[in-house]
Every structure is written in structure tokens, then in C-alpha cells.
Image 1 (cartoon, rainbow, N blue to C red):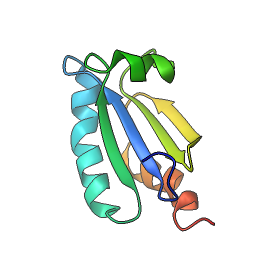
Image 2: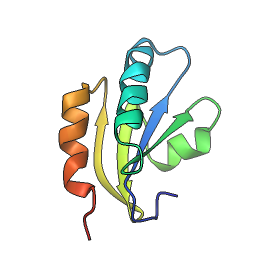
Image 3: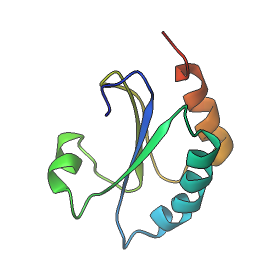
Image 4: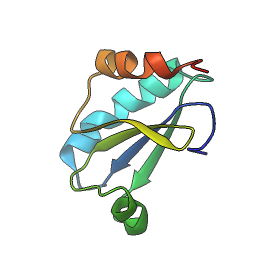
Length: 95
């Protein structure tokens, strides 16, 4: 999925993480607003330690934007909706 043309925003999170709980409704709103333009995936680092290790996730939440299998952007911590939109915009419909 992360190797496709459509940008994929992956949220590495944990159930016990306070900031992750703050990020969840932001991502839900973002996913709804960007439907058909950006896919949003959530990966629980406790249930998927191999995925977390593969991308060297050291803190949660960590957001990574993939496009064509390449990491285009990465940030840890809570990211406000306007910043998420600004980050993703250049990668929508990019050849």
C-alpha cells in the first residue's frame, strides 16, 4: 500500500499514549477530509513491534508520509490539522 501513487500517512501509536489519544480525532477528521487523496493507516507499535523497529519509531505518535514507497515526511508528536494539510498538499496528484 505504501508503494502506490496515492500518498499514505501512517500513524504509529500506542493505546496507552496520551498524545496519541489527542491525535486520533485529528487523524479521523483528516482522513475524512482527504478521502480519495490520501490514505491514513494506524499501526499500534505494541502489536506490531517489527513495523515500529523497521522505521526506527522511538516515540509515539509518529506520523510518516509515504509515496511510491519513499518516506516524504516524518514527525513525532501531535500535529495540528492545518499543518497536516500543508504537509500533504504537495504530494497530492504529484506525478
